[in-house]
Image 1 (cartoon, rainbow, N blue to C red):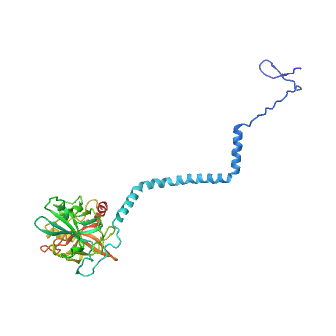
Image 2: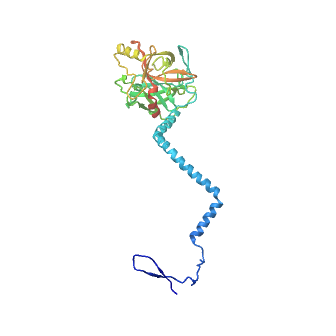
Image 3: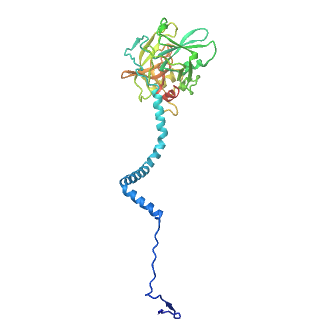
Length: 354
């Protein structure tokens, strides 16, 4: 039997047939022989989460912490990268300073105005024996700063670059008299290389960079007669008084060395003295690119020939520290302050060449 339903519309009437409600249609249910793979995987994941939920929470918290840490450290890492080179340079600087770190360096100091020394008192002091083919003499002095390095004035060793077979040079260490060669160490010219500061000009001593290093090919064996001095690499202020060690005569048979207390001279006053009494020499106490003064003056009194390259020292606690290298000394003719190269101004150059 068919039933018709009338639907109101503007269009012509249309009758839709309906299935008889009394007619039943059988329902079929599909059963899968195997579970769906994705469903099985989901069950395993849920089971794993339930079983290891404590561990998973810890992992999630760790990941979140790492992400937050990265976000926080990113600005710091940028700032660190900018200063990384400076930090590396500081490390290199420390490494270089350790090259000069000898236990017990400069262990001697005298408070007397002037006193004769024996060979145990100034173990860092050395002399340069020169022979030009006609005469032998002690031309300059130097100071041991390492077991393979001696510090001196550049004008002292400028002629050592001469390779003439008639010109000979030796470094004498540890001896104080003409008869004690058994205690003396002699280093021939072939066993060291002169390193002169690149700004040194032999014809113009006023340009200051009167500093040099003798680099030894074989290390010195230290003893109570031979030992290095400490350098004033970190000292900020110049002392008012120094001790100057010097040899009394340049003659080969004279090897007595003395010490003398000397007083520093104001830079302006020293500059004026050299302009008026020192042959109109215009001393340059400062240089472009160097904040510290590069030289200083001291009233040393008459300094015998052969003492250029020696050091002015100052006692700090129980250690004598070298502050200056003698570049120009007072002569008998002119009573002038002695001029010293300020070691502090050239410490980086020293570090780079030892």
